Length: 508
Ligand code: BES
Ligand code: ZN
Ligand code: ZN
Image: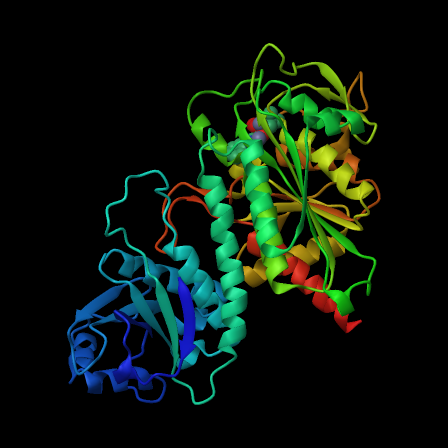
């Protein structure tokens, strides 16, 4: 989707459709705050006013009316899209509005280009960015492998039309919004791929291609290297599979004159289990197919690195994605086995289905050994998190309250919301092992927290936080603004977190 901004007057729009957001209470007759509607009514010789008069358009959220061939327009269609209450305007609601409007016009398969009227209520740079993000994310479909007929819908061009004499900086909004939206879709695309395609090797190859295109340093350790280093936890998980594991590493360095200003190195670590059968502690068959999305933490990290490469914050960042399958076989790790992690700590593997924390343990140690001064991991880690928080919020926990607060704030900013869970020392007692330094599961209680506590053992004294995105990475039902399936949750959150950190540091 090519996204532009212009100041074309309403009568001269050449796109296939003009999208007009309508807030509750707005009418063409209320000329104070609805000048665009009045102007459109004039151009359509009263067609708009009659819709309002008859109560066909009230601005109710996600209601819509499509008008064809009205008035002396160069555009053929007008989509009035219900935006809900004007009091609720924020970047989250605007992102949804724009995504939903794009999805509404995609149903009319002939529409190829759209103009979006940025009305006075939407006049900030942040909201313009939200329009761009929403449109990109809303446009994506999930039928990667369905035969496509020629008329498969795609909006090729989107033009933001401003009513204002001096509109906000649309170019900056388009740049940031495109980076965020495209990376979100990129991560979603990785999540949608079936596991026979998206193997650890494929995930590494895709990350390499992205890194080469965006100017990030790339490296992927293979199993020989992992053995040499002593990554016994990651290797234990991959043992059961014939697909070799990879440790994907992406590095971002700020540009020339910015570089070296700080010794900070932010590590983003993402769980990349390309299929989680549970291993010897095998999962039930029902919905096991969904476990192809167990690499969405890794995808979020790779996507966030893409945003970072494009928007170039002034801080060093390393992305680390341990990628592996988790399968049962004659070679697979078994319940009761003890493995030695990269950190030197020994782990009793009581349940092979708690594999994410094993691969993350070694990846966190890798990040710290490489100089990370702060570690944030993202993982579809526990079913308990899905039960506790559902699809709406991800869990956050960690060793440093400032880091957690910064992540929560970044999440609020972009609508990828978090909820903090505690990590009192008492939870650590649940995962004490009789035979090793720690065991990989506890009892039935506090499943998300004990998983987090396990990771804490490997973060040591480095400020660390963990995001459990098991519930938010994948949605069961479509939304007006989003298809069902992979959401890309974490891409914008992690990218915003890094951008905010860099900005705060520049101010110091
Ligand atoms: N990948 C799963 C967690 C998961 C479950 C993600 C549902 C998304 C949806 C993870 O590896 C897992 O299997 N966790 C176990 C841990 C248990 C054995 C302590 C779980 O949550 O059941
Ligand atoms: Zn598992
Ligand atoms: Zn898993």
